[in-house]
Length: 372
Ligand code: OSB
Ligand code: MG
Image (tube, rainbow, N blue to C red; front, side, top):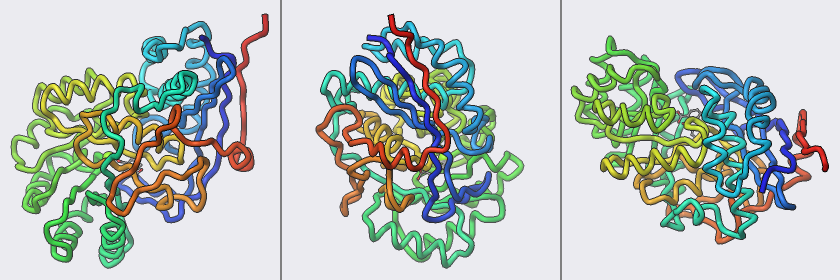
């Protein structure tokens, strides 16, 4: 089976509240959706590139062109029945992994729907309820942060992560620990520090954090290893792990003790599973990161999180934290016990709300196989 057509749609979606990190503030998303068709079935993927190149090098407009000009042409003749072949065919494209993953994940959904299998089962997932955490952005005030943490704890989330940035770090963590005591807490710096900030990072080491996520720049594997040797808190790499090979090197030199896996950042399900297998073999816990996804990306994340290696709560949170309304039905939902149930339905296991997507669409482009 080969693709019959691939449609890109860019949709606009406003966040309920702005999300601020050390690299910037997001108020609304421009999201590329991929619909791949073959043998009468559709599969869906969501590109997680941000609007600007600040988390990593990718961004919405760039990803749109990469998918059009390089990803789809490479897949026209590929037999997609085993979506590993899709991942392999895209390997010659350097970087641009979010663009590649948008189509690769659509192929997985398509094949799973075609076979009538839940995607999480097709991937080899072993749990049907996944543990959920939340990522709380930088807040205008410490009181505001405390209020947010309280609300998320009340919602049942099993791990709280707060964003930090230079000058907005130790005092925030101290305030949260002071108010909530022994909760499962971690911080995410999104690459905002360097080893020159060792004093601050050592202060953060005093709070019994579950992990410190991506304190240093993406390319700073060696400095992460130096830092990890100085800290008792586990370093978790996000931006630095872009594929299985960078994960191997990070583990080999002790640059982290935990790995965040994001489908987009590593190029899709096939590569994500390789990283998960490697970490499981090494005894390194992994969890699923988030990129402020709408429902399609969120359900792909949920499916990946069912793999056995994902032993820590992920940033796979309830759709209602982000959007007034979603693009899938039912909306991805976190239960009061802080878990998300994976559907026993084909593919990502939710219905795609085409009419709503059409209403949100700003531009659309289709590649279609010339009929014989
Ligand atoms: O570093 O994990 C990150 C959002 C956008 C870009 C990077 C990150 C994040 C988050 C939010 O932390 C996770 C989510 O709730 O989707
Ligand atoms: Mg992160």
